[in-house]
Amino acid sequence: RELRETLRQYKALTDTAHDFIFVIDGELRVMFVNKYGAEIFGKSPEELTGKPMRDLFPPQNAERMTGNIREIFNTGEAKYIESQVGFPPGIRWLDTRLIPMKNEKDEIYAVLGVSRDISDRKNSEEARRRSEEKYHMILEKAGEGIFVYNREEIIIDVNQRGCEMSGFSREELIGLNPLETAPPETRDDMRKKIQQIFEKKNVTFELQQYRKDGALRQI
Image (cartoon, rainbow, N blue to C red; front, top):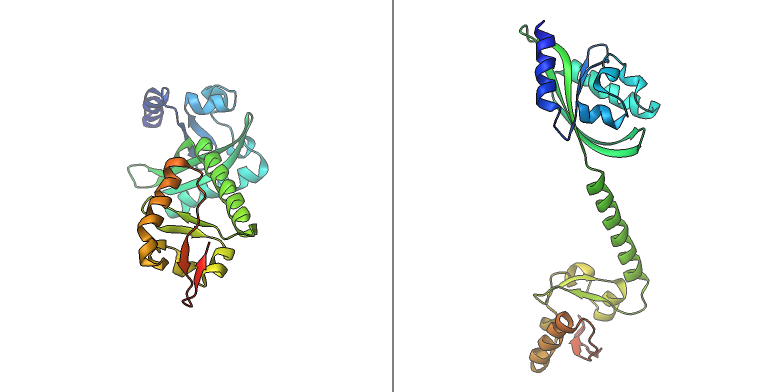
């Protein structure tokens, strides 16, 4: 009776939530799932209640997910997980919090799960990672020395050819202000030209800088 009342309260609280909320019992069956979670499967909460978790997911997902639930029963500790999960509409990234539910005897009788769809964030992160990989590949394959500056005129990236031209290692160049390696009489003009890059986007100019060995170079 108390369990039915608890599940009724969960339903009232979670039916309008935009998270996938579920409760799994000790036999790894669905005790409760909210409306949003059931809709991902194209089902109603009533159709999923009592179903074994293993029957709801692809085998590779089911094995991992049931293992996580068993771990909560065994350890009694909550757990946070980010993972890809296969659903009828397709694969989604979820962040999931699994929390043990205990009775008055402090015994775990179920596991509460709250999953949020983070697919958009994960896809954006992956797109950014691929973009950065492509950027670094272009940077390193370039035959010219490439130096990347921020608005404070500090070097934040450089390719191998730039290191060879300057005689400095990448570690020595990152964080360096290029004005420090320019002849004193050229620094004001060089500062103006660097600022023009941010204002005009595409600027061509010549400048002088000292290599690490003291040799003056024209670039």
